[in-house]
Image (cartoon, rainbow, N blue to C red; front, side, top):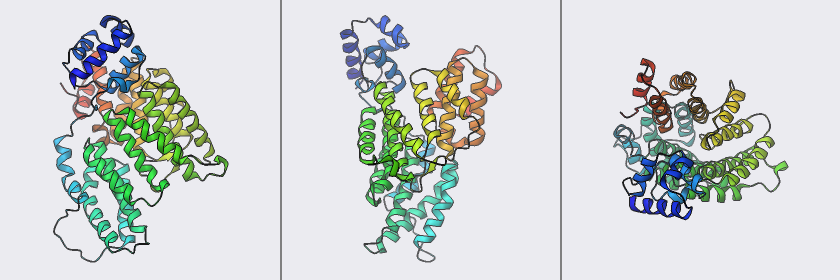
Length: 397
Protein backbone atom coordinates (compact mmCIF):
# COMPACT_ATOMS: atom_id res chain seq x y z
CA UNK A 1 0.00 0.00 0.00
CA UNK A 2 2.90 2.33 0.72
CA UNK A 3 4.26 1.83 -2.79
CA UNK A 4 0.82 2.57 -4.26
CA UNK A 5 0.58 5.82 -2.35
CA UNK A 6 4.11 6.81 -3.32
CA UNK A 7 3.59 5.95 -7.00
CA UNK A 8 0.29 7.81 -7.12
CA UNK A 9 1.69 10.96 -5.51
CA UNK A 10 4.77 10.93 -7.74
CA UNK A 11 2.74 10.35 -10.92
CA UNK A 12 0.29 13.16 -10.18
CA UNK A 13 3.11 15.52 -9.22
CA UNK A 14 4.92 14.83 -12.49
CA UNK A 15 1.71 15.28 -14.51
CA UNK A 16 1.37 18.71 -12.93
CA UNK A 17 4.98 19.55 -13.84
CA UNK A 18 6.09 20.11 -10.25
CA UNK A 19 9.27 19.21 -8.44
CA UNK A 20 9.10 17.91 -4.90
CA UNK A 21 10.31 21.28 -3.64
CA UNK A 22 7.65 23.14 -5.64
CA UNK A 23 4.93 20.83 -4.31
CA UNK A 24 6.21 21.42 -0.80
CA UNK A 25 6.10 25.20 -1.28
CA UNK A 26 2.55 25.11 -2.69
CA UNK A 27 1.11 22.67 -0.16
CA UNK A 28 2.89 23.59 3.04
CA UNK A 29 3.87 19.93 3.47
CA UNK A 30 7.57 19.41 4.16
CA UNK A 31 9.73 18.20 1.29
CA UNK A 32 11.06 15.50 3.62
CA UNK A 33 7.58 14.04 4.09
CA UNK A 34 6.88 14.19 0.35
CA UNK A 35 10.12 12.32 -0.30
CA UNK A 36 9.24 9.74 2.35
CA UNK A 37 5.79 9.18 0.85
CA UNK A 38 7.05 8.88 -2.71
CA UNK A 39 9.73 6.40 -1.67
CA UNK A 40 7.09 4.18 -0.03
CA UNK A 41 8.47 4.77 3.44
CA UNK A 42 5.04 5.41 4.93
CA UNK A 43 1.90 3.36 4.29
CA UNK A 44 -0.59 6.15 4.91
CA UNK A 45 -0.71 9.85 5.48
CA UNK A 46 -3.16 11.85 7.55
CA UNK A 47 -6.30 13.04 5.79
CA UNK A 48 -5.33 16.65 6.57
CA UNK A 49 -1.94 16.17 4.88
CA UNK A 50 -3.52 14.45 1.89
CA UNK A 51 -5.95 17.36 1.48
CA UNK A 52 -3.10 19.91 1.44
CA UNK A 53 -1.27 17.90 -1.22
CA UNK A 54 -4.46 17.38 -3.21
CA UNK A 55 -5.23 21.11 -3.18
CA UNK A 56 -1.78 21.92 -4.52
CA UNK A 57 -2.09 19.17 -7.16
CA UNK A 58 -5.70 20.09 -8.09
CA UNK A 59 -7.11 16.61 -7.47
CA UNK A 60 -9.56 15.12 -4.99
CA UNK A 61 -8.13 14.14 -1.63
CA UNK A 62 -9.42 10.61 -2.14
CA UNK A 63 -7.05 10.30 -5.13
CA UNK A 64 -4.20 10.25 -2.61
CA UNK A 65 -5.79 7.94 -0.04
CA UNK A 66 -5.14 4.29 -0.84
CA UNK A 67 -5.59 3.00 2.70
CA UNK A 68 -7.96 4.26 5.40
CA UNK A 69 -6.43 6.78 7.80
CA UNK A 70 -7.42 5.32 11.14
CA UNK A 71 -5.74 4.63 14.43
CA UNK A 72 -5.66 1.34 16.29
CA UNK A 73 -7.97 1.23 19.31
CA UNK A 74 -6.42 1.71 22.73
CA UNK A 75 -6.05 -1.46 24.80
CA UNK A 76 -8.03 0.16 27.61
CA UNK A 77 -10.94 0.80 25.24
CA UNK A 78 -10.87 -2.75 23.89
CA UNK A 79 -11.06 -4.03 27.47
CA UNK A 80 -13.74 -1.54 28.61
CA UNK A 81 -16.14 -2.47 25.82
CA UNK A 82 -15.38 -6.22 25.64
CA UNK A 83 -18.64 -7.35 27.26
CA UNK A 84 -20.60 -4.87 25.13
CA UNK A 85 -19.10 -6.36 21.96
CA UNK A 86 -20.10 -9.84 23.19
CA UNK A 87 -23.63 -8.69 24.03
CA UNK A 88 -23.95 -7.19 20.54
CA UNK A 89 -23.18 -10.69 19.25
CA UNK A 90 -25.82 -12.21 21.54
CA UNK A 91 -23.43 -13.47 24.24
CA UNK A 92 -24.44 -12.37 27.73
CA UNK A 93 -23.49 -13.14 31.35
CA UNK A 94 -25.26 -16.21 32.72
CA UNK A 95 -27.43 -14.35 35.23
CA UNK A 96 -31.17 -14.94 35.13
CA UNK A 97 -33.90 -12.32 34.75
CA UNK A 98 -35.29 -11.24 38.13
CA UNK A 99 -38.47 -10.71 36.12
CA UNK A 100 -39.13 -10.49 32.37
CA UNK A 101 -38.24 -7.08 30.92
CA UNK A 102 -40.84 -4.77 29.40
CA UNK A 103 -40.54 -2.23 26.60
CA UNK A 104 -41.43 0.52 29.05
CA UNK A 105 -38.82 -0.61 31.55
CA UNK A 106 -36.01 -0.90 29.00
CA UNK A 107 -37.01 2.41 27.46
CA UNK A 108 -36.75 4.05 30.89
CA UNK A 109 -33.29 2.52 31.39
CA UNK A 110 -32.24 3.80 27.96
CA UNK A 111 -33.48 7.28 28.89
CA UNK A 112 -31.25 7.15 31.99
CA UNK A 113 -28.26 6.03 29.90
CA UNK A 114 -28.70 8.74 27.27
CA UNK A 115 -27.33 11.58 29.45
CA UNK A 116 -24.31 9.41 30.31
CA UNK A 117 -23.65 8.89 26.62
CA UNK A 118 -24.14 12.53 25.66
CA UNK A 119 -22.17 13.72 28.66
CA UNK A 120 -19.19 11.53 27.83
CA UNK A 121 -19.40 9.43 31.00
CA UNK A 122 -18.25 6.30 29.20
CA UNK A 123 -16.87 4.30 32.11
CA UNK A 124 -20.22 4.61 33.85
CA UNK A 125 -22.15 3.92 30.64
CA UNK A 126 -20.40 0.72 29.52
CA UNK A 127 -21.87 -1.73 32.08
CA UNK A 128 -25.42 -0.46 31.47
CA UNK A 129 -25.34 -1.40 27.79
CA UNK A 130 -24.92 -5.14 28.34
CA UNK A 131 -28.26 -5.70 30.16
CA UNK A 132 -30.01 -3.29 27.77
CA UNK A 133 -28.85 -5.29 24.75
CA UNK A 134 -29.85 -8.55 26.43
CA UNK A 135 -33.29 -7.25 27.43
CA UNK A 136 -33.91 -5.74 24.00
CA UNK A 137 -33.06 -9.04 22.31
CA UNK A 138 -35.50 -10.81 24.62
CA UNK A 139 -38.26 -8.28 23.88
CA UNK A 140 -37.83 -8.63 20.13
CA UNK A 141 -37.89 -12.42 20.40
CA UNK A 142 -41.27 -12.40 22.16
CA UNK A 143 -42.84 -9.39 20.37
CA UNK A 144 -45.74 -9.80 17.99
CA UNK A 145 -44.69 -9.52 14.35
CA UNK A 146 -46.68 -6.33 13.95
CA UNK A 147 -45.24 -4.64 17.06
CA UNK A 148 -42.32 -2.37 16.08
CA UNK A 149 -41.75 -0.78 19.52
CA UNK A 150 -39.24 -3.40 20.67
CA UNK A 151 -37.29 -3.27 17.41
CA UNK A 152 -37.23 0.52 17.36
CA UNK A 153 -35.90 0.54 20.92
CA UNK A 154 -33.25 -2.05 20.12
CA UNK A 155 -32.22 0.01 17.09
CA UNK A 156 -31.57 3.03 19.33
CA UNK A 157 -29.55 0.95 21.81
CA UNK A 158 -27.48 -0.51 18.98
CA UNK A 159 -26.98 3.02 17.64
CA UNK A 160 -25.46 3.97 21.00
CA UNK A 161 -23.07 1.02 20.72
CA UNK A 162 -22.15 2.02 17.16
CA UNK A 163 -21.21 5.56 18.18
CA UNK A 164 -19.09 4.27 21.05
CA UNK A 165 -17.25 1.90 18.74
CA UNK A 166 -16.61 4.73 16.26
CA UNK A 167 -15.33 6.97 19.03
CA UNK A 168 -12.88 4.31 20.20
CA UNK A 169 -11.71 3.35 16.68
CA UNK A 170 -13.29 -0.14 16.77
CA UNK A 171 -14.69 0.23 13.27
CA UNK A 172 -15.44 -3.41 12.45
CA UNK A 173 -17.73 -3.59 15.48
CA UNK A 174 -19.24 -0.20 14.58
CA UNK A 175 -20.04 -1.49 11.09
CA UNK A 176 -21.77 -4.54 12.58
CA UNK A 177 -23.75 -2.44 15.08
CA UNK A 178 -24.90 -0.03 12.36
CA UNK A 179 -26.03 -2.90 10.12
CA UNK A 180 -27.99 -4.50 12.97
CA UNK A 181 -29.56 -1.18 13.98
CA UNK A 182 -30.57 -0.43 10.38
CA UNK A 183 -32.27 -3.81 10.20
CA UNK A 184 -34.40 -2.85 13.22
CA UNK A 185 -35.22 0.70 12.08
CA UNK A 186 -38.91 0.92 11.09
CA UNK A 187 -38.60 3.71 8.49
CA UNK A 188 -36.10 5.88 6.62
CA UNK A 189 -36.39 8.84 8.96
CA UNK A 190 -35.65 6.68 11.99
CA UNK A 191 -32.69 5.23 10.09
CA UNK A 192 -31.20 8.65 9.21
CA UNK A 193 -29.12 8.92 12.42
CA UNK A 194 -27.66 5.51 11.61
CA UNK A 195 -26.68 6.70 8.14
CA UNK A 196 -25.04 9.68 9.84
CA UNK A 197 -23.06 7.34 12.10
CA UNK A 198 -22.04 5.37 9.02
CA UNK A 199 -20.80 8.53 7.28
CA UNK A 200 -18.97 9.68 10.40
CA UNK A 201 -17.28 6.27 10.57
CA UNK A 202 -16.04 6.55 6.98
CA UNK A 203 -14.82 10.12 7.52
CA UNK A 204 -12.97 9.14 10.69
CA UNK A 205 -11.31 6.30 8.80
CA UNK A 206 -10.33 8.65 5.99
CA UNK A 207 -12.50 7.04 3.28
CA UNK A 208 -13.91 10.34 2.02
CA UNK A 209 -15.27 9.01 -1.26
CA UNK A 210 -17.38 6.41 0.57
CA UNK A 211 -18.62 9.01 3.06
CA UNK A 212 -19.69 11.33 0.23
CA UNK A 213 -21.41 8.49 -1.60
CA UNK A 214 -23.42 7.38 1.45
CA UNK A 215 -24.32 10.91 2.55
CA UNK A 216 -25.40 12.02 -0.92
CA UNK A 217 -27.63 9.00 -1.42
CA UNK A 218 -29.36 9.51 1.92
CA UNK A 219 -29.70 13.27 1.43
CA UNK A 220 -31.41 12.65 -1.90
CA UNK A 221 -33.77 10.09 -0.35
CA UNK A 222 -34.62 12.35 2.61
CA UNK A 223 -35.17 15.60 0.70
CA UNK A 224 -38.72 16.84 1.43
CA UNK A 225 -41.04 17.32 -1.53
CA UNK A 226 -42.14 20.67 -0.16
CA UNK A 227 -39.92 22.38 2.40
CA UNK A 228 -42.73 24.65 3.56
CA UNK A 229 -44.85 21.60 4.48
CA UNK A 230 -42.06 19.43 5.94
CA UNK A 231 -42.02 18.57 9.63
CA UNK A 232 -39.14 19.59 11.89
CA UNK A 233 -38.05 15.95 12.06
CA UNK A 234 -38.01 15.64 8.26
CA UNK A 235 -36.05 18.88 7.88
CA UNK A 236 -33.59 17.83 10.57
CA UNK A 237 -33.01 14.42 8.95
CA UNK A 238 -32.41 16.02 5.56
CA UNK A 239 -30.17 18.71 7.02
CA UNK A 240 -28.21 16.12 8.94
CA UNK A 241 -27.21 14.29 5.76
CA UNK A 242 -26.51 17.53 3.89
CA UNK A 243 -24.15 18.34 6.72
CA UNK A 244 -22.30 15.07 6.14
CA UNK A 245 -22.14 15.70 2.38
CA UNK A 246 -20.49 19.05 3.05
CA UNK A 247 -18.17 17.64 5.72
CA UNK A 248 -16.91 14.87 3.44
CA UNK A 249 -16.71 17.06 0.32
CA UNK A 250 -14.64 19.82 1.93
CA UNK A 251 -12.12 17.24 3.12
CA UNK A 252 -12.10 15.62 -0.32
CA UNK A 253 -11.05 18.95 -1.88
CA UNK A 254 -14.44 19.51 -3.53
CA UNK A 255 -15.18 23.03 -2.25
CA UNK A 256 -18.00 23.69 -4.73
CA UNK A 257 -19.89 20.58 -3.69
CA UNK A 258 -19.25 21.37 -0.02
CA UNK A 259 -20.63 24.90 -0.39
CA UNK A 260 -23.70 23.70 -2.32
CA UNK A 261 -24.53 21.20 0.43
CA UNK A 262 -23.95 23.88 3.07
CA UNK A 263 -26.31 26.24 1.22
CA UNK A 264 -29.08 23.62 1.18
CA UNK A 265 -28.38 22.90 4.85
CA UNK A 266 -28.91 26.61 5.57
CA UNK A 267 -32.31 26.39 3.87
CA UNK A 268 -33.24 23.40 6.01
CA UNK A 269 -31.94 25.14 9.14
CA UNK A 270 -33.91 28.34 8.49
CA UNK A 271 -37.08 26.31 7.88
CA UNK A 272 -36.81 24.83 11.38
CA UNK A 273 -38.54 27.16 13.79
CA UNK A 274 -37.88 27.64 17.49
CA UNK A 275 -34.16 26.79 17.73
CA UNK A 276 -32.34 23.51 17.18
CA UNK A 277 -34.40 20.36 16.74
CA UNK A 278 -33.17 17.50 18.94
CA UNK A 279 -34.09 14.24 17.26
CA UNK A 280 -35.86 11.63 19.40
CA UNK A 281 -34.27 8.74 17.51
CA UNK A 282 -30.85 10.32 17.03
CA UNK A 283 -28.40 10.41 19.91
CA UNK A 284 -26.15 13.17 18.55
CA UNK A 285 -28.52 14.89 16.18
CA UNK A 286 -29.65 18.39 16.86
CA UNK A 287 -30.13 20.46 13.74
CA UNK A 288 -30.96 24.07 13.04
CA UNK A 289 -29.28 27.41 12.26
CA UNK A 290 -26.64 27.05 14.99
CA UNK A 291 -25.63 23.60 13.71
CA UNK A 292 -25.20 25.07 10.22
CA UNK A 293 -22.97 27.84 11.57
CA UNK A 294 -20.88 25.27 13.42
CA UNK A 295 -20.49 23.37 10.14
CA UNK A 296 -19.37 26.54 8.36
CA UNK A 297 -16.77 27.11 11.08
CA UNK A 298 -15.51 23.54 10.72
CA UNK A 299 -15.28 23.80 6.94
CA UNK A 300 -13.37 27.08 7.23
CA UNK A 301 -10.83 25.42 9.52
CA UNK A 302 -10.38 22.51 7.08
CA UNK A 303 -9.42 24.94 4.29
CA UNK A 304 -7.08 26.92 6.56
CA UNK A 305 -9.24 29.99 7.18
CA UNK A 306 -8.91 30.27 10.96
CA UNK A 307 -10.04 33.89 11.03
CA UNK A 308 -13.42 32.82 9.62
CA UNK A 309 -13.70 30.07 12.23
CA UNK A 310 -12.96 32.54 15.01
CA UNK A 311 -15.52 35.03 13.69
CA UNK A 312 -18.23 32.36 13.73
CA UNK A 313 -17.06 31.12 17.12
CA UNK A 314 -17.40 34.61 18.55
CA UNK A 315 -20.99 34.85 17.27
CA UNK A 316 -21.84 31.50 18.87
CA UNK A 317 -20.15 32.20 22.21
CA UNK A 318 -22.60 31.58 25.01
CA UNK A 319 -25.09 29.66 22.87
CA UNK A 320 -27.00 26.96 24.75
CA UNK A 321 -26.51 24.02 22.41
CA UNK A 322 -28.42 20.83 23.32
CA UNK A 323 -25.67 18.28 22.60
CA UNK A 324 -22.28 18.29 24.36
CA UNK A 325 -20.35 16.21 21.78
CA UNK A 326 -21.02 18.37 18.68
CA UNK A 327 -20.69 21.58 20.68
CA UNK A 328 -17.30 20.61 22.07
CA UNK A 329 -16.22 19.49 18.59
CA UNK A 330 -16.99 23.05 17.47
CA UNK A 331 -14.95 24.33 20.40
CA UNK A 332 -12.01 22.22 19.20
CA UNK A 333 -12.24 24.05 15.87
CA UNK A 334 -12.08 27.33 17.78
CA UNK A 335 -9.03 26.12 19.71
CA UNK A 336 -7.35 25.04 16.46
CA UNK A 337 -8.10 28.43 14.92
CA UNK A 338 -6.53 30.24 17.88
CA UNK A 339 -3.45 28.02 17.58
CA UNK A 340 -3.21 28.66 13.82
CA UNK A 341 -3.26 32.41 14.54
CA UNK A 342 -0.52 31.88 17.17
CA UNK A 343 -2.93 32.81 19.93
CA UNK A 344 -1.68 30.01 22.14
CA UNK A 345 -3.03 31.16 25.53
CA UNK A 346 -6.52 31.44 24.02
CA UNK A 347 -6.22 27.97 22.45
CA UNK A 348 -5.15 26.46 25.76
CA UNK A 349 -8.01 28.19 27.57
CA UNK A 350 -10.54 26.58 25.20
CA UNK A 351 -8.93 23.15 25.58
CA UNK A 352 -9.04 23.43 29.35
CA UNK A 353 -12.71 24.42 29.20
CA UNK A 354 -13.47 21.33 27.12
CA UNK A 355 -11.52 19.21 29.56
CA UNK A 356 -13.58 20.47 32.48
CA UNK A 357 -16.87 19.85 30.70
CA UNK A 358 -16.23 16.61 28.75
CA UNK A 359 -12.95 15.03 29.92
CA UNK A 360 -13.51 11.41 28.82
CA UNK A 361 -14.57 12.58 25.36
CA UNK A 362 -11.58 14.90 24.97
CA UNK A 363 -9.14 12.06 25.59
CA UNK A 364 -10.54 10.24 22.52
CA UNK A 365 -10.03 13.19 20.17
CA UNK A 366 -6.98 12.91 17.94
CA UNK A 367 -7.76 16.47 16.83
CA UNK A 368 -7.05 17.71 20.37
CA UNK A 369 -3.67 15.98 20.32
CA UNK A 370 -2.88 17.54 16.95
CA UNK A 371 -3.64 21.02 18.28
CA UNK A 372 -1.34 20.51 21.26
CA UNK A 373 1.43 19.04 19.10
CA UNK A 374 1.31 22.16 16.95
CA UNK A 375 1.56 24.40 20.01
CA UNK A 376 4.41 22.35 21.49
CA UNK A 377 6.41 22.49 18.24
CA UNK A 378 6.22 26.29 18.18
CA UNK A 379 7.47 26.82 21.74
CA UNK A 380 11.02 26.57 23.06
CA UNK A 381 9.92 25.64 26.56
CA UNK A 382 6.65 24.25 27.87
CA UNK A 383 4.67 25.62 30.78
CA UNK A 384 3.46 23.23 33.46
CA UNK A 385 -0.06 23.69 32.09
CA UNK A 386 0.95 22.57 28.60
CA UNK A 387 2.90 19.59 29.90
CA UNK A 388 0.05 18.44 32.12
CA UNK A 389 -2.57 18.87 29.36
CA UNK A 390 -0.34 17.00 26.86
CA UNK A 391 -0.11 14.09 29.29
CA UNK A 392 -3.88 14.16 29.83
CA UNK A 393 -4.75 13.80 26.10
CA UNK A 394 -1.89 11.33 25.50
CA UNK A 395 0.30 13.41 23.21
CA UNK A 396 3.11 11.06 22.10
CA UNK A 397 6.72 11.96 22.92
